[in-house]
Length: 171
Image 1 (tube, rainbow, N blue to C red):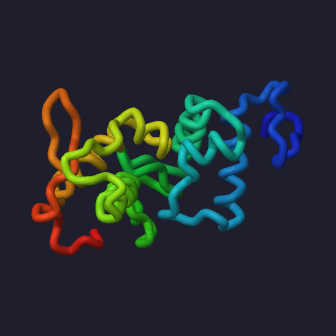
Image 2: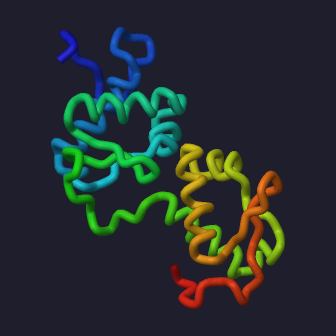
């Protein structure tokens, strides 16, 4: 493909092929072997960062490379998925912002974050979950819609009193 062969299990950090292309090739191989199928999420930026010891911008370029190759598409706030845009996603795929919101709601229920105390801010969520600002904002909006939290402009987002929490607390 690039005029020479490199070991797909080891990134050649000194060679002529950019790291993001090497990682994209490794993900493409997973797709071709059937380990990742249409609708499955592509490993997140945070996962790629950790697994391959690469920078966030490099991980972002991996997703772009896969999109350019026609192997994946991205849904803002949810992630990058195998296949063509509009293709159905795996039913087991829950949007990332909902997973984050559910984890924070569990912390609220467990009393780890008591009523009238702030939940983690956007920057903390971005760092902790390896997500973009828009995803952190979607998680907060989702918690607010459900009644777990309320936001005070320029102060932060705080846990509601239990009487305002959702009746079905598994959501």
